[in-house]
Image 1: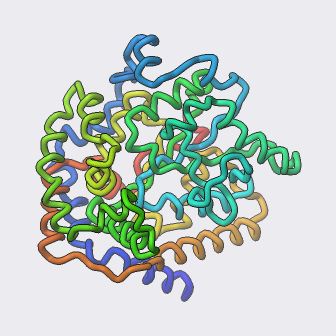
Image 2: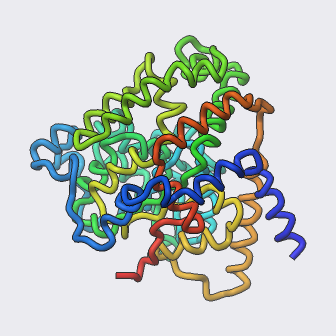
Length: 396
């Protein structure tokens, strides 16, 4: 019991600065969002699912937008797709990945193909980024699948049997093409696709992203043009103020032509990299719309970072159920798994490489920005105990 209480105290400390904001999100979920907020998630619950956006276009148009070639990109019908952790960046995807892969049937990629140092976590390749990287995508499905086949070739058959790989690429949530790229790739398997998203308090996510940039800058990655150098070359408040007008314009354009609007708003070039990486990625509704256009709610498990840090055993067990991973019949082994989960989350909750803190004016600016727009999905998850979806795999 003492260990549990100490762990809870560590996790609670992370959210103290933003307790008021979180309470405001949770208490105002229906008052602020009303029917629109409910519709953003519940539209698939009580009505037949109808694809929208890119997913509703003719096949030729979809192929043109995605750069999709069936012979190059389509997976064989008997290939098992990985489970996707799609983001959000700086939301806790690494903590979720580390906790999920405690389970012996949640498989980590350990292939030597195109290994890049920043993609790895404790020797495994966490972020494959195939669907959001032009070079990887252009190389075709065979290159992506080689990660899995190479890993399986190194494993005992009994370990690989029935297991599922994890592709935890936080860039997947903010690329408007990824949801449909995945569906088109695993077209025969699309009913079995599963997506996990870790959603953090939007203001806290921005601050974490800024600290991440500061760390990169302080580690002497001051190469001309490197995104961390451009990001921290101005004060935080200046960066936020300079991009808010453009953000508001983009969000106003999120109507039925939202694909074009989001594409315009999230241009990943030198001029817009600060805007794209720092603030826009905290607007979860706009990013998840592309997934909800392609898949119904049964395919999703949305978890708040606060729930993961605070109720880690419950969260991880629910995610395992969603993935269809069996509970271990050996209770002692199961307890050992959960103890490792506790240790991993405590480790992630204490990571704090820089001491920078925002000013009161900065926080007022961020809170106003994120409160004046809905962020309904995050609010719904907070009000629902930190979860949306996460239906066990056996549920019809």
